[in-house]
Image 1 (cartoon, one colour):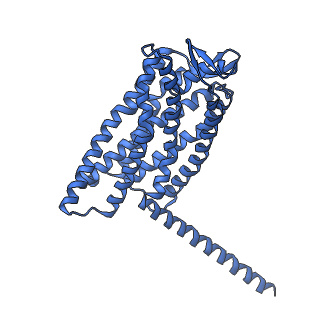
Image 2 (cartoon, rainbow, N blue to C red; image 1 turned 60 degrees about the vertical axis):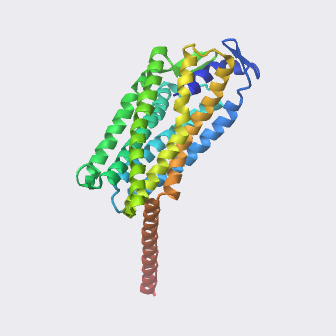
Image 3 (spheres, rainbow, N blue to C red; image 1 turned 45 degrees about the vertical axis):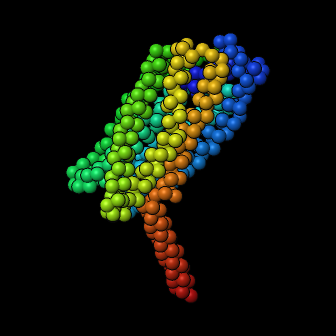
Amino acid sequence: MALFTTSIPTKLTSLARDGDKTNIHNCSYGSVNWTYTFVPAYVMSISMLGIALNIFVLMVFILHKKPCTVAEIYLTNLAAADLVLVSFLPFWAVSAWNEYKWIFGRALCKMVNVGILMNVYCSIYFLVLVSIDRYLALVHPMSHLTIRRAKFAKIGCVLVWILGFLLSIPKLINRELALHGNMTTCSENDTTIFLVNELMISVFGFFIPILIITGSTFKILKTLKGRFWEGANLKKTDHKATILVLAVLLAFLICWVPYHLLKIPALLSYVGILTGCSSKKNLYICGQIFTYLGFFNSVLSPILYVFVGKNFQKKFKELFGQWYHNRSATISLNSTSTKLSRSIKL
């Protein structure tokens, strides 16, 4: 998926078995064994945790008897996008454990990488929709009569999923099985397509949506500050939803901004502008850390729903209460039926 988590390890793995030192392009790298031990364990852990947490979030939003608000529709789709990511991560973990040898075939080689890249695009554009929704709710409160409707929110989510897939097509085309020495890897086939795809990720998957999110968030904070000084009260539902959205946005930025910023020097190194051995080694190490920090966001978001989302907590309590009431009624009915059948027999 990324320059520093696929291309570099592919080059390293063919030489890593020969000892703790490798030499690529006349640069000596230290031991890379930690990428075959710690990384698979970490990726598998966040995968299992992410699957459980995001399924839990989706169940609460979907099974609750009340329809989701516009903001909750976007957050539900964000949880679905995170679920897609963490569901594909076990394949990545197994590949890292096998020193990036790919054993799952050509179809999964393409599918796993496209699924992960779709998450990168879809997640940030769902956050764009969320930030715009909060902007409209606070700055233009009457917009719920026109734009902020569940129907339009659902249409927007469908368009985001389609956009995420379309932007991932270069990855679908370019990912192929390749033979490196005596092992098969899942790597980029064409350098030009690879560079175009990396540029697309930076522009359409980061800079453009971040500008929209930053502008909307600035307006939201300015409005909140103005109403605070004026002594005006926000609707409780808007206040709670805004706090959760701002927390999710902040978590996303903390997890993904380092990953996207590192793409700039990584691309310079790839095209031969940055040639120092120390810079290449630092890019490799930072690339590993920042990529898996980005993956952790898919675990952090549902945790924020549980601990920060007051409306989510309320929905969970109501859903649990409804489930407990139905279960108690079923047990009571079964007990009554048993007693009645016994009395008839007697």
